[in-house]
Structure formats: C-alpha cells, structure tokens
Image (cartoon, rainbow over all chains, first blue to last red; front, side):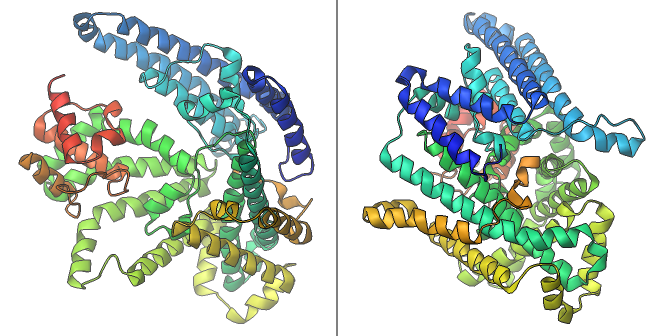
Length: 510
Length: 75
C-alpha cells in the first residue's frame, strides 16, 4: 500500500477505530490484523517471505531460549564446565537462522545481479517492500535472545506482530524487540496530545516527501535516464537535487511512519537526526539511518572487533607496527568492513559496492590520519569549538556526501564516473538555467523546492539548538496547534507531487 | 586506577577521564573509541571481554571501566 495515497489515511483511521474499540488486552489483535492486511497488498510472494522469516526466527529463538534456560538451571561449576559447548550450540543455532534469513534475502535481492555478472540464470524474483528491514529486525531479535539480553516470545501471533508491524514495513526503522514489543502489546489508548503530535509529524513528513522530494525527483529522473546528454553544470544540479530528494524522501518517510505509529501511542526508534549538521562522515552515518548503524554496531562491528582473528591481528600490528598505527589497525579494518556492508545493503549492483568502498576508505583514512590532523590543528591554532571550524567541518562533510551521491543513483558505475568527470571537466556554467528549465522543472518548482529546503533547514537548526518544536506548539492555544496541521495540509495539496510517479519511497525499494 | 587513566589517555588523548561522568551519554566516546579502549584493556590486563560487556553502562566513566576490568579478571 502506498502511504502517500488517500487509501493510507482511510486505512489508518479504520485500524485506529478498531484498536480503540477493542478491550485493552485485545488491542494488539487490531495491530496484527492491520499489519497483515497492509502487507498482503504486496502479494502472496511478499507474504511468503514474511512468513518464512517469522517462522525461522520464532523457532530459532525458542531453541536458543531452551539452551539458555538449561544452562541457567545448572550450578556454577557445571555452568563453567559447559560454557564452550553451550556457546557452540548457541552459535550454530543462531548461525542456522541467519543462513535461512540472509540466504533468502540474497536470493531475492542480490541473486539476479550476481547471476548476470557470472553468466548464470537469474531468478527474476520481485523484491517485496521492507524485506531488508524486517529481516534485520528479526535476526537482531534472535541474536539478543542468544546473548540472553531478552527472553524469547512464546506466543507466535504476538511475535508475528513484532516482525510485521505495518508502519515499519515502508522503510524501517529497525527496532529492537525490547523497545518495540512491550509497546505493541500494551494496548494503551493514545491520548489527545499523542494524536495531535502524530498527525503533525505525519504532515511534516508528507510535506518533505511530496512537496520537496517529489518536485526534486523531476529533474533527477530526467538527468539520470540520459546523463550523457547533459553538461556538467546540469549534472551537478541533478546530483544536488538527488541529495535533497533522498534527504527529504527518507526523513519524510520516517516522520510519516513514526507519526502513524504515534497515533497508536507507540514510539518507534529514532532513525534520522539531522545529518546535515554532522561534522564528519562517520558522524553523518551515526545520524542517518540510526537504527541500521546501531544494528551494524551491535551485531557486526563489536563481534568482529572482539573476535579471535581480530585479536590476533591486533597482537601482530602492535608488535610489527607499534604506536598508534599498530593500535588502531584492527579497529580501522572492522570499520571498513562495516561501511562496506552498509554500502551493499543499500543496493545490489556495482555502484553500491563502490559506494561502500568510498565510505569505508574515507572513514578508515580519517581514523588512521587522526593523529596527523590533530597535530596540524594544534600547529595552526585551530579552535575546535569555534563556529567557523564547525561550519568548515559541516561543509566538508556535505561535500563528501555530495560526491558519494554520484555513485548511488546511476544505473551503472561507468555512468557515475562519466557524470563526475563531466562535472569537473565539462561544466558549462551558462547552460545550467536553460538546461534545468528544459528538463521540465519550472521557476515555480525551483522556488517551491528552495523555500521548502529553507523551511527544513530552519526547523532542523532550531531542533539542533534543543528547541522542541511540537512541545513549543503544544504550549500554544488550540487554534495555533490546528493551524500547524491545516497549513501544511494546504501546502501539500497545492504544491505536493500528488498521484505522480514520485510516490514510491527510495528506501522502500531496499 | 592511575595505570587505567594512562591507558585510556593513550587511546583518547583529548578526553578528560578524571572528571567526566557520562562519557557515552554525552557523546564523548563513540563505538569506535570503545572498541579501541577494549582492545587496549584486553592487551594490557590480559583479560577477555565479550560483546555483552560493550554496553554504555560499563563505559560511563573511569570508575565503571575499572569495575568492568575487575569483573573480567575474576571470571
């Protein structure tokens, strides 16, 4: 179901009515029914993938829970003696679940591109919406049970709700069981403030998605479909618009789904914290898609960094390299691997492989060069807390992100490189405005996108300073509060790209 | 404790480990710093730390890190 269509608010209202009318201990039934109905719109295959993921992780978690319970019942001596055998069984069980889930994800999302590179037969499977998100969330649950952080959910229907909760099916966030499941099952009725906050957040999300991202998409789609035909200036503008589109598409989508969940009194994990203000690329990724970063940290980066192989590498590098370089080499390698995986997670072709390498190399280099950079700052007497330095760091991060965007939208890596080459060596400044207008973007579109970006930047700058916009609004009279719902609604209806091709979310295809 | 502070300073020279009380919550230590600190501690104290030990509560300040090493040493 397209959440920018009129069907979604109707669906949401019906689900909310059912939720509120049911007795408190049965309200989660309404959420489960709504979630399955929402996902069933994606077809039988989509339901089958969801079912396999839920079944594999449900059974795996129960087996792990049984292993942990058996060990907990032992006395201290027996527990110590059985530690190795217990860990081996735990790892085998969790590994089997990972193989089923990630194997299915590979078959659905990556097999065709791998097959075409190797000259094998493609499967031609349709990638259902949200598959990467619910698989990562479910596997995270299994690993948490394996580590004894949470207890496995015995009720299959309650567990299915955790896997399939409908707002998350669009583009995450990847929540943890400990945070999400108790909220889903509590059956708490939302109060008037939560309803108003939820609607306001959704309106803000629709504004970013439909008014800004939807309009920016016009020029992006046109240029990327035939990049060879445009001068560097138009290509650079299209990449800038793609950067704007992705920022507003992703953050707007997250606001919509967080607002929708908020209507049921459910607070989804924060997934986007104003990355435009990041001072480094590593910080950018800590602010962009926060829950994916947390997942990678907990289930890839930490285990990898503390693994036997990395410990051995650490001993080797300390002995042979010594100093800071010897100390940070293993961590840098683990960081590189994580960013490489994040790159591939975003897509199944060479451009995303290059994107992963690009991020991995820059972040790893910044770790390795940190001592040198620190000495340079001291020599130049740079004050790190000064506004000018922070502005410089923000501009530097934005430039690095901007260049990275050349890699992620083009269908082939060669085209990305041609676009980058043209931007640098074949710019043609004077062809910019006529080029943009010829692409179907009018002056009105340019002004709307420009003003929209200014509004987003202003709001985010206030939030960065600690201003809580919705809380401030809540302290005003009812008229002001409702105006902040109707004004965005009017702007969306007047200027939003309604019913156009720009309704699909970029991250929804991941 | 002095030895610990010295080790921590060698990994993160810009951090004031003697006075800071919430190194993780205030964003001073990132996951990268934590892993580097843990690698250093495991090498210096010859202790084994697990992924389960890498929780914010264990890295709030020098005192909680010290307690973590003592617990790991007595395992």
